[in-house]
Image (cartoon, rainbow, N blue to C red; front, side):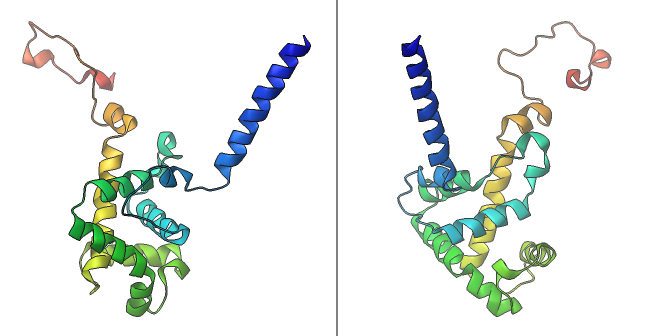
Length: 184
């Protein structure tokens, strides 16, 4: 009996230290990606995560409230974008706060959510005259966040009605009898 208690306590201790270790940094998943080119500081990661969540707030979907697109975005930028666009993206997120302060008179990090939404609308409609690097950050985050959402299991099953292979076989069916089987 003492041996079982000792093993149980050892397992509980190791699980507890693992949980405490993983909770110390909210961007631990990004740092574990071992990115070669994109080396962002915590304030830059906060900025990119905030942009991602404001551009496409898919966290409002109950099944996706704990998801973040940030590791997906940074991994794609690091491994897929060509060197020129990657450098433009890195330059853009490093100078984003400063350029927004020059354009609007207020740093992005100091803005309220309503002001950020107006700013992002102006970016989306290309009404704001900003550097190509800042636009590269906005466009990349927008496209990669949409790509992340459309590849989630929730989206594939509930919106796209994806079915695993082999799917259904409907051999001799009249077209008038067909209906979407997922609407039932």
